[in-house]
Length: 580
Image (cartoon, rainbow, N blue to C red):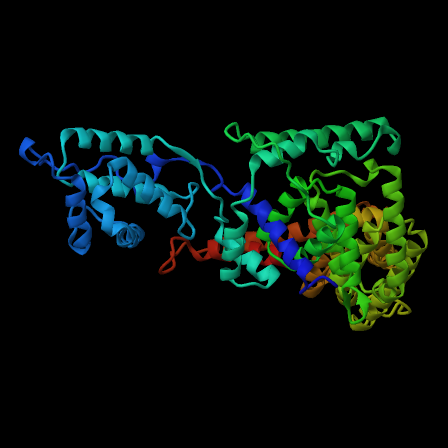
């Protein structure tokens, strides 16, 4: 896109960061007493100045500690406090002893606020102020001074401040760096610049009174049904209320209003391009932007699809990328609206865009129409792409059916060759027929599984119905022919072991094909009446052999076995007949 690597991209990055800071869990009020680096209770010196030392200032003892701060042992000192108090002392060394307690604390706080990355919205400000009080408390002091310091400490711990937000989620940080191609240091620098100007109350003011709210975008006559308008109004107003509740800040009296980015359509298009090749963390951040900026959901979908259509692969539209863009755009909407419920003009614009994309891509897509059995993945992608365009695809469906029929016919010819099945032979060989039906069954299973996994696509393009019909039409004729042949020969084909095994496989294959395609031929009725006679003859044979085995049993138990030889022979007899 034209904006990648430009000042506008940097502007969009700032706007994106601003939204992430507003939503981050770190942007909250914190009570100073809850800061983990501040002890609940201070260490207070046991010694007090007596009446004979009233003239000795507490500051004299404070100076002694400051000049030997490296030897301070009462409690661990915050490294930044250590650095800042020494710097502060060097500035005020000449008149340090003349400070009163209040003046010292106030002067040190003013000093802190001039240091980088320290403000009243930063825990460091309170940590270092409390630590100054705690150092004073270990100095020799009067009981009145101790009471004053303890009261001041208690007052500090009771303070509540709005913490400057950051981006707490490290994965989101990394995603922003990767997506905008910046370093972590640059991101941190931008956060420090932006987090001082974000305001929850400004967001609330925006959602309470801005004319740019989604609920103001359309009137009832823009929709084809009044229910569609009511749905739009309800969803947009629910989002507005959610945003107000989320960002409500009773302690902030700001009257200014949050502002959405300039060139909002270009901003959305740039973020859409980035999101197509970014992580789920970045995408979640994008959704928050769409919500707080009140971006029209229909324009989001258009932006995503147009961006994807313009990213060519080998000079051609990439159907897989466009499909991904379509799915992401639906998720990126501030709230989801089905295409049926879109305003009439928005539908019209979408279909015009779809028609242009269709015209630009259809010739490149046609070679995939007959690729079901060769490249099912790309075949599915192409059909999904065409379906999402929401156009009248009557001619396309006919072309897909034509190529699917041609492909299935080629498969059948190949199956006949591989199974050496010659339809002109007077008698069908069961072995060849079973091999042929196994190939057909495999293809039908492919179609059936595809239908199961792509119900909407199959409903639109009838792939399973058309493909299975072509495969089953000649196959069913062969099944009928074979059944007729074996009936005419009274199942004499079942006389040897190999034929029995192949016949069992034949039955399984026909059952599978019937379960998948529900063809209109009751082969069981044709087969099993006569086949039961064959099974009856097998039963008679088994009984005769059983009698012979029992008659010849000498009832001698075999070594390592709890049964006599006749029992083992019977088991082997039954197993042999069942397996055969």
